[in-house]
Length: 165
Image 1 (cartoon, rainbow, N blue to C red):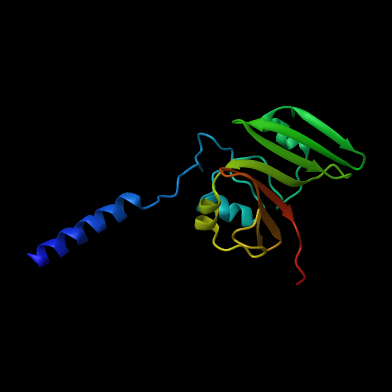
Image 2 (image 1 turned 90 degrees about the horizontal axis):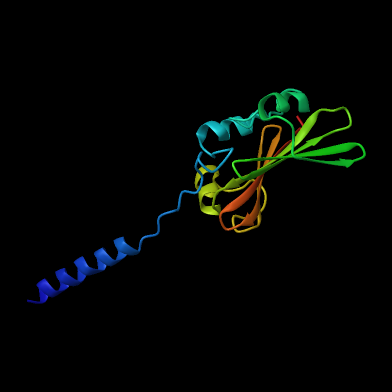
């Protein structure tokens, strides 16, 4: 009789643990995002390319290259030597900075993703803490930064930072 009770309690405990197990919600989908963080986009980011967009840092690109794909920007801010262009695609804000020589050099893309999804796909950040509001990954000559906006939205920032060889 005692063995049956123990077995019953064990089955009940396992059932409760299974029911209460948390699954990471998948907010990182192509339906809602310009960039979906997966193996292909991670490899692209590490090489200075935002896969699925006209944005890349591995070679010089200009605003005209982006306008061929996305059309004219929605907003422009003139900071004398630097210009900032803003697009909204799939209800996600994309910010592009242009230097004085008219080359695009910093890209910011708002993505729907959770901290858990970023850490699951990217691992521990190369700078900062897993619990911080900013997760930084340095790969080759590119810095990939995730800056927290809210629980399910992060800003992905990509820019060129040459390493000392």
